[in-house]
Length: 136
Length: 134
Image 1 (spheres, each protein chain N blue to C red):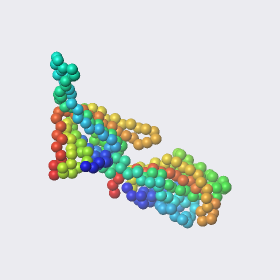
Image 2: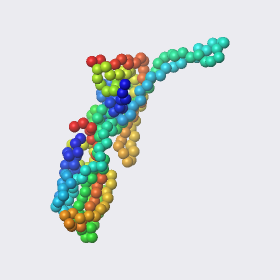
Image 3: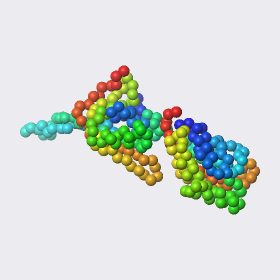
Image 4: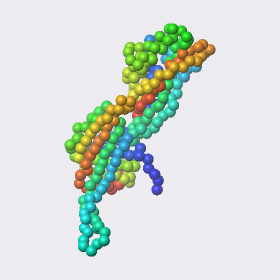
């Protein structure tokens, strides 16, 4: 399991979300609304014997929506952060057929605000734990 | 002399290598004892009798055709050959090889985590603990 392959594939899973531009890396100037993949907290090696399993912990998919004070931003955030249903990003990520890893679990969504290219922007940070083979 | 990490452990059940699904294992040999104390002694005298053993392992569930459920569950109630290699596979490395009756295969499903499995056996007859051949 290689980190770049996983980041690219999670970004691909976002391709099924209507209206989102996806980047498999922490793109500095994304076209909004967008998802950019950020680096994980770390990699826990040797979760089973014989290099059977590693875990990537707290891999971040950051969804950048728009002005936090706009009603449209709130509505988009609500539908994407929904834990279930046809617009749920958790569903899109966990339901994707991954080849770079065995499993991706979305464990948390947190909300932050900060400028993107000087424009106020709401961020939803989806934190994921990724499990896969310890071997390439 | 050097310490050896548990991650190197190899476990073969029959001809199937299940190491990559394992997180824990216990492999031990024990002896029975017989009380041979006679009159005139001030302490109990014991001698060893027959050897026996214990072997169990557990780990992460996997749905593949070579995963623990596919391989181990059908073996419950049968006798298999177990090869336990505490330092991995390689010429001259230690190994315990023995027959064992598979007495239990169980799965556990915690709501906030991955499905796990465990295997319990009762080793039978004598063990071969010679190092691995080239």
